[in-house]
Length: 391
Ligand SMILES: Cc1ncc(COP(=O)(O)O)c(C=O)c1O
Image (cartoon, rainbow, N blue to C red; front, side, top):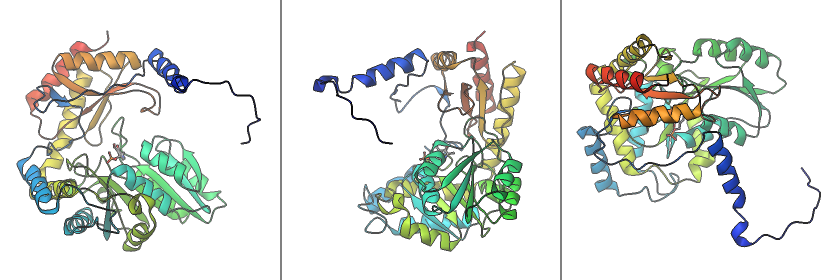
């Protein structure tokens, strides 16, 4: 867009960022201020806010693996994965993750966010139509924005709408993109329907299994294993290592030729320092623990159902969980913030989701049914949420 030239007011250097204060005021008036809170190491609150779905972040086998990795390989990866940033630990993690989830190959990134940007930009071109679920995670949305492709925002969880847009496209290629389990309500995508729609029209399927890995499927093998799509030649998955695996990082899983293509072309792989060895070690330690103790996945799912049922019995508007996330509706953003703060004062940490993190504009408390919680802790959490809730 060409802007007409207009005389610019002279601004003192100290006024150049004044507009940021105005924007902050607007956010404050809408109840959308966000602040950082430092968490002490020995925070005494009951934690239903973290994404540590299996409660592995402090497990000695996991922290021990992290320490060993840092001692052996150093504090950082020292460079891009294609230069010095690939250690034997990265390769082991990729092989074990691919094998565990049922894919031919995997490629590890420094975050799940970077993995999503990589998959969306490297697997598309100007002759590709991306069909993206309206409730997809921000990292998928940003990947769509970075891809040099047309993007169609499909209605949430609607394979018929996906089928329709694929059928009428003029593009040579198409990619259907969806979260497996949606971050806000914890509901699962209709993967069988999306897959059938994609296959009927020669499209590829990209599924972000950030909330499925470690929770869904036999022993936590993920949503694609449940849908019998793991290892399919037209399907690619992304995962994060920062939720169930208690670490940091992300990965793309798929056919070997997809992984090769990403290795050679994905900008968030090539121009980013490799995942820190301690994070790779942590994820590998957690993955091995999950293999040895497969009951952890089922326990997280069971607790999520218990939590949702008890919240509903207490008269609250709780979502029906398909994995470990349960949300409770709040009357508005300010009420949600106040509710979360009151929970904390009463000894319970909960997540608070407000616009723009909620695609439907409805603010919520977001709870994670960590697999290591006890039944008594779930009861206590429900008691606090009900007691502090808006009238
Ligand atoms: C669905 C989904 N995809 C991707 C990400 C990004 O993963 P990471 O935090 O590892 O960057 C997240 C989480 O934050 C997520 O919820």
